[in-house]
Amino acid sequence: MAGLLITEIGLRRDQRDILKAITIGVVPGKVVTLLGPSGSGKTALLRAVAGLARPHRGSIRVGEELVFCAARRIDVPAHKRGIGLVFQSDALSPRWSVFDNVAFCARLAGGKNDIKQQTGRALEQAGVLDLAGRRPSQLSAFDRRRVAIARDHLRGDSGGL
Image (cartoon, rainbow, N blue to C red; front, side):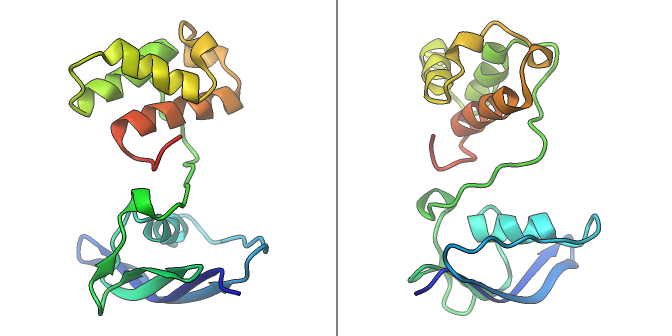
């Protein structure tokens, strides 16, 4: 039974190797922890698996599907990989309400029609519509993450809610 297989992944940023020939296999149902100092490539590896960073070499297999292979020029888009990635920082503006934080990203994504409706729908799907008038400092860490997920969904950084 296949889980996650990362083979010889290499990733560069600004002509500098971030990942050098990383190979990891994860059995389904097992929990794996990536440990290392700041800047060691933990997040870069997770971003590559999720399809948010494009390696220059190697392959990534999720289950039976080959989602990335540099040699065969296979690169399944992030929104079709079925992988979620939650970042450590929610990066919400402390001066804006929950609604304004999410609406801002809808505007950045080019949404000119019905921004209020799009924002309301994203907040509802994330389960935080009732918090729309609050500021991030008035939210729990869990609620801030849900607001960030709603925002990122409208910005196009996630596969969906």
